[in-house]
Length: 332
Ligand SMILES: [Ca+2]
Ligand SMILES: [Ca+2]
Ligand SMILES: [Zn+2]
Image 1 (cartoon, rainbow, N blue to C red):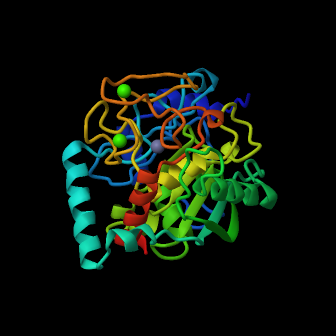
Image 2: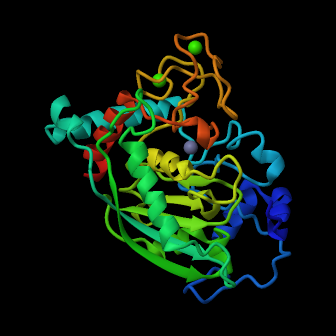
């Protein structure tokens, strides 16, 4: 188990007020070598992110320490900005309108998955090299994502049609960025490509990962992408979350998927028909879990739940269709 001083400090310092304050800090790095935080005892929150500054800070996949790890990816919290039922409905309407404008028949939309999404990996290592994962480990992450999105892990899994190609790796050695501080700035300064490019920043923070949604690209393109804990890559050091499925989960959000427990036990749920509604997030891998009286057992094996990596083995056909529609509407 890793013990990093700032990590335990962050437990008491985390919070929306600090997070917002830190975004305006003049001490943020302007270049990869500037703006180091020398005094790590300062009560700076590492959970500093706001994808949409008008929305409350909501993150999931929280991994503060081993005690929390045993309870899952963060309970009821989210790893993306909060989206309520009304906004879900608005987004669905907007997506339908965009698809209609682009002439996307259901057949065309189903074929709209992108088979070779360029992936730019930004290794945000510490000044001393902490978190400086190898190129082999990065390629392994891309490889498992391709397996997951192709449905290779289960006979029940959908072949979504999406695929990923490593387009570039850059490395920074900056403690501020390594700890995901000033993330709006570092993402803006390092992001590559357009709406159809996946940018993945590997950092060390109190989460497993955090993602942006495709419908937010137009208003906030410079931060678009996923932030992933470097130690969640295949062979990483985070117990139960070391098979690279955190990145798969975050990319699911990046392609327009909600959690399978989004909205709780409701008929609209995650706007995907073939994922049974779920009353709450899954921890571990509880066979037969059924937290919602609506039909079907909880989809504990779905990549968009909070189960352990070893438990997750599928996207559904409905999720594949939703990702294709989102791709055509917002990224294609
Ligand atoms: Ca559903
Ligand atoms: Ca049920
Ligand atoms: Zn998530």
